[in-house]
Image (cartoon, rainbow, N blue to C red; front, side, top):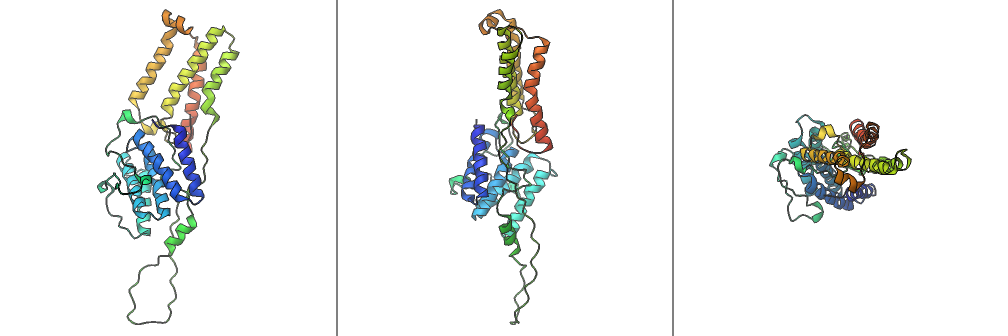
Length: 326
């Protein structure tokens, strides 16, 4: 399983490299992140599509047009296979591919489904993001926090003025004149389609990441009951908070109602909670863990601490479309 801190560091470093104009480094870092996402999430995850879209932009800025086209097509193919045809991510990824092909004189009428998802082995290692084609097994929809710099409608921050100049500098082709003429007046350049640019974003590290541990410590210190009961309440709070957090952080950018259910992870979490509830009522285990049964008001504290970060993360991911760690 990919380390969420390592993934977050890769995305942050790639963004900083792109903002500094070092698109070769940005492409290398995004390539590493895409490989980690593909290995953990499978080849059809929307977070992977978004990373590939930004990787394509980095390759385009480096002049690696073949690599850029391939990643644009991969991003669009994932969105087309995963989402309905009228979903904004599908239409936007298709528009990104169309804009790239139009700007670089490349045909765009090749169906993405006809493109092999496996990159050419002769390409540099920074862009080898191959993975087995096919659907995403629910059990492999791993709980790997991932970064999506922006939805597919946004392309990695990279010198919008230069892109616009490039688009404008290609006047429409005209038939050659049979006879020389005086210097003609240059036609007015076509208005360039604006290139969406991702705003500079820092990786949010909310204090809610540590809320469970801090709350457990506060409960243990301030609970008016016996110390043994306070310790068990704090431990139960930690366990329940981690179960909820594991399920909520399956993706850091896509809300749970869009991800669908991960049955394996859900059942595993319920088994953990059932064991935690049962321990105080099983004498050998109760004695070993110094566990005491919790009262309804104790469970209310556990539920509040465990669920509050997940609910806030769901609201932020749904309402603002931003990365948020529960």
